[in-house]
Length: 299
Image (cartoon, rainbow, N blue to C red):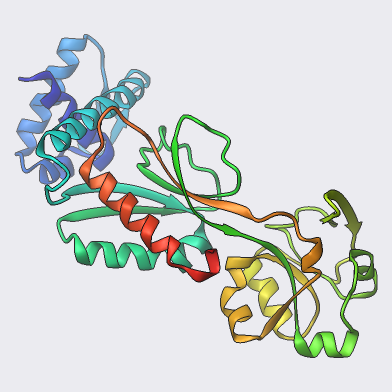
């Protein structure tokens, strides 16, 4: 058999965690899939998979080979897309990642409209609050908040986000508006550990970074809980502006000490730049760039 075909079958078996599921994905018979993997192992002279009637386990050699084979298969598909031209109807699978809340609030609406417009596409969305290694986890597109560390990826800026201190109008009427960061010592502080891991809040004053140590009366693990407490007139907390965009727009929350904010952090659509431009990946990138740039809370 053709070596690229064998690689494609092997990658499908690993990603679908079985011969039968890979066969359905590739529209082949399970025996044909099994023969392809066996032939690949024979050609390589190594065992790629340990398989029993119930379990499938990839070997160390198989794991290393899988990473390389996946890139080769992807490059081949990108070359096919390039030959067909960008006017071809996007078809196939694209994987995208974003943080949980940002994905829920902004990315999902874009994906829903994208899939309605491109019904032959499939999207695998990974929403997690960690920086995903795009190469190791097979991610095609990522939405990243903050300065980018890895320059090997291509990035398109789609907006910016502020770090804002917020309180409700009833709380501010009762306790007064802080005029400088040091005034926070006289206020009730709600701390969300996800955004503020320590009890020191940092500010910018005339271009210099200053820190104010606070003694929170309530500490929570997530920003959603912190927002709920602030909306209940219980105190002041810090958020990323997109996390409380609806509450700010409705007037339920007010931003305070805005003149001491750090500069906004950028939002980028990041993708792995290959030798060829994949039509399906490019279609999702273009769609998400336009969708995110249309969000007033990000611009």
